[in-house]
Amino acid sequence: MKTMNKIVFLSVVLSLMTLNGAAQNISGSWRGVLEVEDVQLPLVLKITPDGNCTIDSPKEMVRNIPSDVKYLSADSIFVSTSIGFDYAGRLQDGVIHGTFTQGGISVPMELSLMQRPQNPQPPFPYQTEQVKFTNANAGATFAGTLSVPDGAQCVLLMVTGSGSQDRDEELFEHRPFAVIADRLARQGIATLRYDDRGYGESVGGDVMNATTRDFADDAAAGIEWLRRSGRFQQVGILGHSEGGSIAYMLGAQGLVDFIVSLAGPTVQGDTILLEQNRTLTGEKSIGLTIDHIRNNPRVQQIPWYQFFINYNPKADIAKITCPVMAINGEKDVQVMSEMCLDALRRVLPANEHHLIKSYPGLNHLFQHCETGMPDEYESIEETISEEVINDIISWIHQVTK
Image 1 (tube, helix red, strand yellow):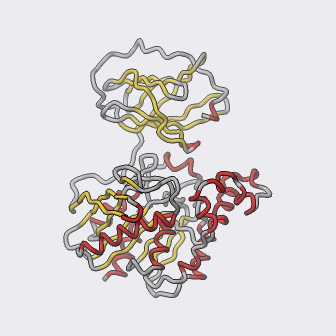
Image 2: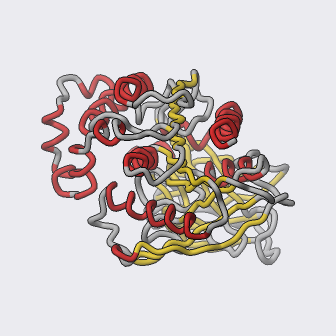
Image 3: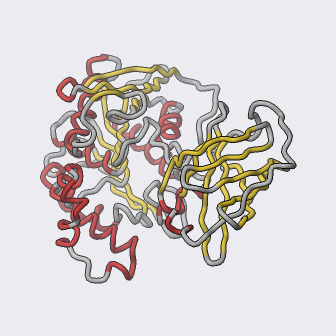
């Protein structure tokens, strides 16, 4: 890890550990903060019930660092990571007390079990079905979960944000789409959420060269599958971040009956990237311009970025005639609330059912937060604001009655 370059650690001593068989109580996601001199680095150990372990560095937005599990019992663990340091610890009174080591220095660190109180828990008062649909033109088949309460008349296709993600849009043990789908189903609203192209249980399709327009075609295939099922009177779409852009694209084509856009960009991509960089880098961004964004080698070499910086959603938004719920968090540093909602208001054709709203104190994931910066996401127990969930439910009931 970049912030640990000057840290050198000692070997781990496991003399206090006693073999107790397969892991039980110690499985889960455990968070701690490594503190050495002026360095404070949050780390997350994710220990699975089957004995595997990966490590996340939320501050650096690095996930799933491989590790070799040398020892694992009901209350103890010793892992050696692929980036050159070890961790050994024992569970006591709900906390793993342990030591990180590398080279010649040892550093103690305690880990606490990460809590995600909003994650859905059985029993579920609705049916779930594992389904598949196909985008034949892309050679891609998508695996998803259809959540259907009794008597459901409307359904939403749920579309994730940028980057390959699973159907729950899982990030740092947060599963926002699972939470939303569960809450909607409990209020009579069906949903279909699916693994992105080439990710999870979805197979096929070119991922490396795909753009937002290609992912919109994937979502359109999901909408078509829901229409052909004949089970629902109304079919809408709920998209987060890039998924919000896709919702606007499909709305422009008249493919959906209503749209829920969660932090969906409404201005050209190069402007989004410029504002992101200015916010995330602070003083380092002085003098940063659109040309700097466009001439970045990463942007020039990756098709997704090329499409993103050139795509202006204005023309698509101007064609939308269905009801739109578009919301942002005021502390969002990835898709800036004021800029995007103002742009949407200027272009979106009038409809008495539109709801355009900004939420104070919420970040890009619609969590209550301090700064809105991405390095806060994993440390916040809340997955998504209850106010936001309740507003989504209330609005869908209004436009589908």
